[in-house]
Length: 169
Image (cartoon, rainbow, N blue to C red):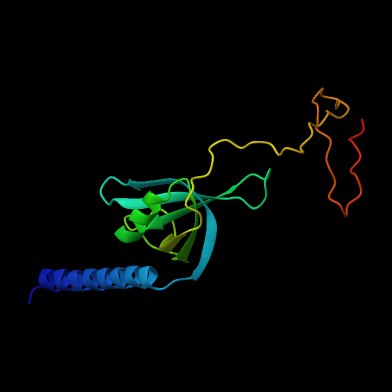
């Protein structure tokens, strides 16, 4: 056996070992969940994306209280039946059960690390698109102008908090 043949053989053995380790790592990250849980909110966006590997990607808006900005939860779906349920519930309140898979080596499997496994619709009616102010809401008057001339709204303290004074010059 010549020296060139030995080098080529060792190279291919090394390449096969690296490929097997990469495949084993990918299978491990896809089948082992770092965490799992549920999130409730409104499905805002859900679409199939990707140039070569098409994956289902979506956004869930989580609203804790009225007048608080919603938190956006981005997720991926691998199961077509779950994707169909989410498509049927766009704009409706749902609870999604998910698993978090950290370290997936490529975006060919998903754009996010959160994989939705199950969907439960909460109410059959779609939520309104616009947010209406509460009937008992009163408009706030601007506080004293700041040195830069910007008007700041007065803060409303919580029932167990003292009022916050306006900024001074």
